[in-house]
Length: 83
Image (tube, rainbow, N blue to C red; front, top):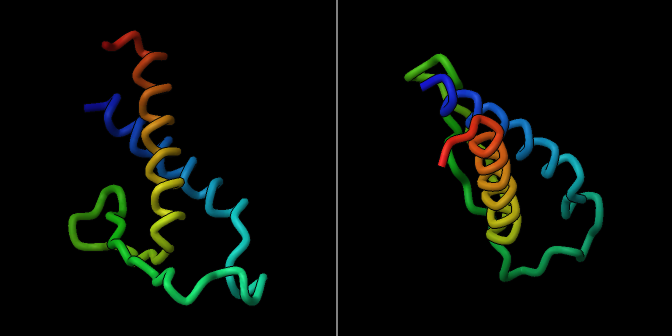
């Protein structure tokens, strides 16, 4: 359980870093196409069953965030010597 918690936290930090590096459409007008609509997900706050935060990104951004989270999880798993 401790490993899963560490992997989730590491993934959340990685996702934040990826998000911070990506320019937003508001900063670059015209960069986002009209066909790229926002997809929102409710992110669970660690330690609370009721609290959550709604986060919106485009499909391409979610793919990047999910890949970064998966990579962070795999790296944490390998560091612990798990298969």
